[in-house]
Amino acid sequence: MVGLASLLDLPPLADDLVRVESALRGSVETADAFLTEVAGHLIAAGGKRLRPALALTAAYAVGSDAATRPASQEAVMGGVSVELVHLGSLYHDDVMDEALTRRGVESVNARWGNLVAILAGDFLLARASEIAASLGTEVAGLLAATIADLCEGQVRELRNIFDVSRTEAAYLEAIRGKTAALMSASCRIGALVAGLPRDTVDALTSYGQALGMVFQIVDDVLDVVCTDEQLGKPAGNDLVQGVYTLPVIRALAGAPDLKGLLGAPLDDHAMNRARDVVRSNGAISAALGVACDYAAEAERAVDALDPNPAIDALRALPRALVDGVPV
Image 1 (tube, rainbow, N blue to C red):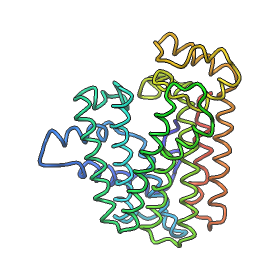
Image 2: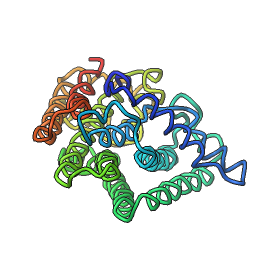
Image 3: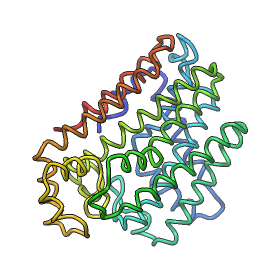
């Protein structure tokens, strides 16, 4: 996916993300050296930090010159809280997927086992909730509701594992919870801690929801078109795990013989055959077309807001995500 710096090119963002990084590392330090190591494993591995960047950029939207000044400490900690939720969900996802790698390093479950990974993921969610509580009752309630949305979205996905009849509507409902909810919360938290007017807060919340849909659809396309090295995790893993995403659902509609390959766990050979089918029948462009529709929705959400560098950067982000797909 396109590098973050080229998507949100705002003067204070790089330095503020350094502040987020430092606070992330500090947030998982405990008296237990082992727990500190495990909880910090994926923090040390790096990442796009898109969710903290969204919280910070929403906070910059407070005025025409705000995107030239460092963010408040509250905005930084809001970014930390949403990133900790994201990281905690990754720990849990890797257990469910039996993933061996994440972000180019050994996954927590592969290195220390499922029980440690689950407990460490819980610890990260607890730390996120603690930070959110320090930012006020509305932020705390929002983050708690978002964690519930993530769980609901994941359960919706699990109910359709290896289901070749999974509908596009079911897919979209699942990703609305498991991905878009946290993107939406990131924007809303940044706007709330910056004290933005309520109509601006609501507009940025809607923007984040639509952006999250774009992000997940693009991510699902990348799983089909990219290599392990490009992704930093095993490519085609959704197919192996029986998670049939939008490009696969579109391909099934246009290539009925694909159904014979799916419906059960795949070895590497069958997975690569299935990826070839999905890449060859127009399903990729069709899925990206849906992502473009959500990108337009995200743009419309901020159309009524007064232009400033932060709003302009947010408006450009959804299209840049789609355009960054190597097809």
